Image 1 (cartoon, each protein chain N blue to C red):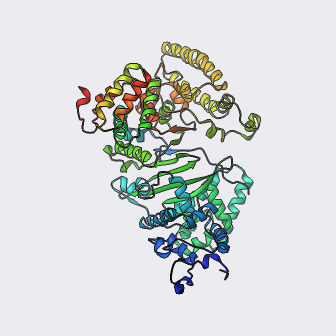
Image 2: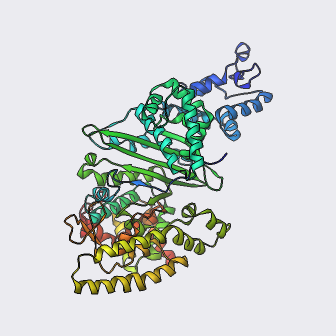
Image 3: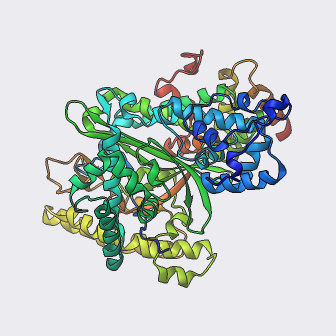
Length: 511
Length: 103
């Protein structure tokens, strides 16, 4: 660092004996110790606050924001606001206690932004809730080396999602070049990535590569390559409109000790204006790890998490089999999220700030209806197989005229007008259960011994169609959610029927 | 700089890695009985109301209930909470104020 660096020339306190007053400390050293969690109380070093000569003040703010990636407002507050400074020290210490270290003060700034105003500065609930080995018996956390390998491979594999071939080649070449520079082998060889993850020096070199940093950020929607081995990621995510949103992601894996099968839990909390959104939830729990009686507890613990971190909304993608049907009952699609997947041509046609109905109509037309109608035909074909001639005629009339004729025509018109909901799609043909599903939710022939459930046509047709939604997680909406699923809306009777006990009042509900 | 990656629309909520389905997961989460799960969920929500709920939040909740529940169910819920909330809980005032104002 140059001699005149303000970071290197901070006077600890002003009201000290003259001899001490001349003594200067290197604030850059202090910042490093701070990030490592080595400073327990910064006020012990600066008993009267951090005082800097005016000339140095601006220089300090300039330098710290450049070096640590923090905003100038953060740097100023760090200098001027004692309680804020204490909070930052506290956050750094808490990370260290939990075995993680901040790579830059920018992460502390992100953390305070997402966790304001509820000031939950202990990260252990975040880490514990996503640690499969803590939540499920019989599984053990995978090593940091395994975690890094997995994440590097994920970055490599996500190239498959790029739909421009020239771009894919370019990205491959960039990665191969970065690997070759540090004398590693082929990009396609998993062993290359194992070696990279294993060696701290190689990984350091790789992380310094500007192309790789950028690629990793893009593949992970903003996460930093220098945080790759951490269970908790702090980053800024740029949304489609160019707004920068602070985000916290926790993501952990564990292996079943006996079978070696992996489980993985993760979620992101993102701050959008005043709203905290829970998103990108990953719940993969290895079958052998799922103890029968733990499911409900898992669900309830997660509900507590929503409360603990003051989550306002949860974002989900339903593209899974039978489950999608339940999702349609609790939420409709989110137009903003869905519009991100529309083709450039359609978006251009719609123009800025399109009428919501027109937008919804286009989303149905482009993203839902094609697959839905194709699925309907396949499912109807399955339903008609193996029928006796008499049954077949009656069924054919029902399917072809009533459902695929009248009802579908009405639904299509309603959808194109932007007036349908995802539930309308799921409900098509609800009056008659005739589609046979196996336990994986796949369609099977009517006589198949694999039949696990029987459902209706809309239920079969909506499966495998991805759609995005947001649910408000405030209390009124959570109660609405229950009322929607419990069609009777009589909550007391629901509680009595299912034998619930609340607080000290044990069985009196039924009196 | 050109953006390379478009995020694929995918979800990994209980999806089984072999079959790609979530059916088994939902069965596990609800303990095989979705009504019981719903009951437990409702009980948990009410339990949560018992600690640190502000008068403002409670008023919001009552307003929302009033807006969509059948009258009988609304009255029944008020009575249920009356019994379930601890004696010094803000609910009791909120309920009295709510009923007085609505009259």
